[in-house]
Image 1 (cartoon, rainbow, N blue to C red):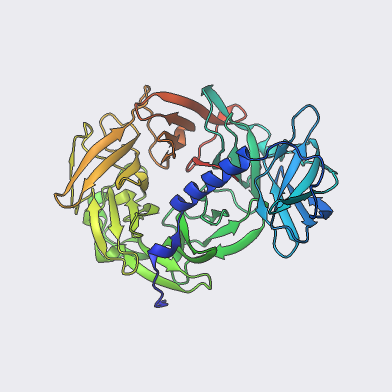
Image 2: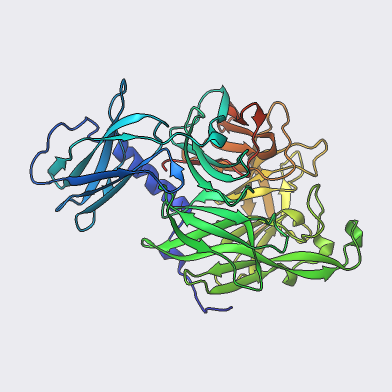
Length: 487
């Protein structure tokens, strides 16, 4: 199991760094030289343009072409009655170009052509006709019904358990229209779906909700739908479906961090169970691309059923139930444990617990929080100011209500002071799942999971945008709702 693999966090590219870099590239691509080119300026020839659909993905076009001497290229696309639009620039290597034109309208005729560049030289291809695929029947009525405002430019990604019995990863534009999907026809359970630092996506595929002895895997795939890698925990452990985070050195994925678990007989009579219940206990793993793994931390070494807080809807077959994993600015791990009401920070190489917030072994006293802390929480994220932001499901609040809440951690004095929270006017409550995300401009996106509501608020608690994720006339619940600047 041990690979003796150690990492140097100073060389990592993490999701936080990706977000800042991608935002910059997106702004540059969107704001520079956006006039529709009409003629090449010289030496770059662009030939053999071919367009094809994605792999179980759409509506999109995958453009391949030859562009000798070019170092980058983008696609222009236009449909009747609309102005030409362009993708960001993509690198061209050894004259072979490939650009994915995503978030197109379904069942629509386009003219697509390529602009290639190398320094001051450029060239364009001839135009090619392309008709996008229709949306699958299971997605034709999936949308976010906006009741207030619009979301920021970019996309809200989530997942849909389709009415056809299969699973879809989806993206919505700022107005709530479904503009992209990737189909997984052999699955129908929602779980972790996110964008990773290399721009690829990962999604959990399997039947585990965190404790069942069933197989599962994470598929890593591109915007065009091509699967590039499958990540699992080696036997005899089961792969948990709550979160996977990839880390890169330069452009190469060097490790995945995720949860696995095994089962032990435990006395759960204090929580309404039996004296010898089969209970799942989780571990934190680092998995290398070749499948070898380091077991960094075993919850059995720190907690027992006496630490189980038993929030509603947590199965007694799961002692700890981790549901999120993040990296602090020093590269160490931050983990949320729902069934323990705790968030922990771990040394990235040894797994040693550095601190615990909440739960029976907390190193902090919570100050300034009128609700006296959090319970049943999801999606703990470290902010650049070293605060922790989390989605507090609020299973222990009276009355129950859910909120995003931010704490400033003073590790020297052992205090966690509430710096910000947001309570929705209707006191929305979700018993499980959910997410909250601090955007680069300081606004906060909130995913009210089982209530199927996605909201955007500013630092003053002003509601900027809100919508309900719908499938036809019914609410469509989700595990998380995450904003990304580009697909």
